[in-house]
Image 1 (cartoon, rainbow, N blue to C red):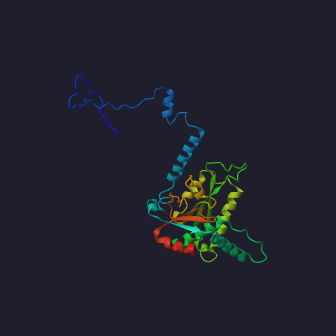
Image 2: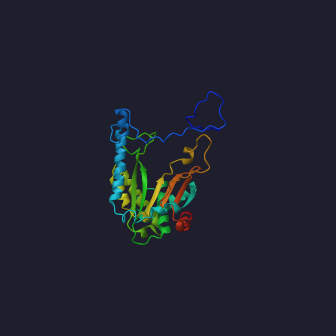
Image 3: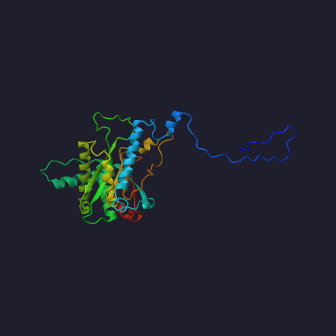
Length: 301
């Protein structure tokens, strides 16, 4: 226990009285602290020379993003989506085993082969990410009840470290990603038995566009394009099945029982990370509670 005593107690040569009242001092004047020298003055001034080039660039990016958002009319950005409702979304986590993922990829590849015909060259097999992104996109479209003629989009991030020249080291800890956007002009194309194939092809097209020009779309214009999209018809897939979240979160006490990303606040967002078992993928989703049962039926059906 720590006691705090008032300052300014009078000193006594003889025995101390039973009660001792502190002196009452007038309240100190509130004065603005001044820097001692010119160096301190530059450190406190936002216009000083203390800022590094990276700090100035970061401030410029933040200012430009805010400027881009403010330039759009409220009807185009905030009018289409009520951001205050993002805390009322339902969340659920699905665990997809290695056999289930192989079955999903095989189903998409079989649909592509059947559509191409026997004489056509064999289509490119879909990856685990493409298959799960297509599955989540079609599930969100069905659960939200998008009508025919509605455009819909799927956004995700691509790792650019191995796609740059020269390549960036795997030990790089900073962000080296680029936003990718897959689009579908008619939501009805993603419904039906072949809907997942069309979704997978749209995701593959977005990946191919990124691989052809990795740095294209990394300027400030991507934020303007993103803010023009209809948020209610936008699906966002974050992370990757290659991200071994349970191994990365092992701090010496063994693998955690569960790993979740808490920053999910979009109606139509899915986070994919490696699961606890070999070949397993954990898919966490956030969606309107009224659409969760329909989404679950699409994923588990």
